[in-house]
Image (cartoon, rainbow, N blue to C red; front, side, top):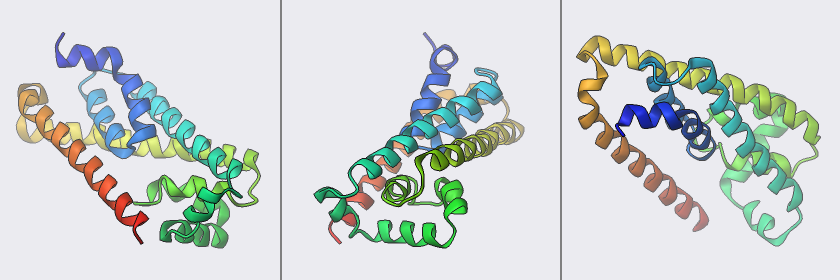
Length: 188
């Protein structure tokens, strides 16, 4: 089975899972797959929104359920938590909508918001709308990037054997950097 067939068959599920675990990278890659006509535009946006929505609802629920627990007390001492809560207190609705667009705030924010008194139903509604907008923005960026790549270098398909290792290396480096930053954050 070639790469295109794999993406065409599992693309939507991969975008949903990737959006929940990794974020923007999965959506941009999904947008490139849309440009290559391997998956549908609207389905890719909805899958990305669903993955992000489910992940953020889960993190919110963890913050809400364990807000008085010992681990959460340690979590509250981290700098990222303090930044998230401070931003939330200044503009609660705007912050709930925008945190996924802010580098370094994607995971900590829904947990931090879960520890506040924000009603769960309000978070759910804002989170759903924000996930949809966020997904549409990054899938569209991937789609446009696919057009730019093809305009500059011809059909992307002829570069798949070069692009795939580059993409894999970029994802591995991004995950390693993220792990290092998290580890550094726990040592502060």
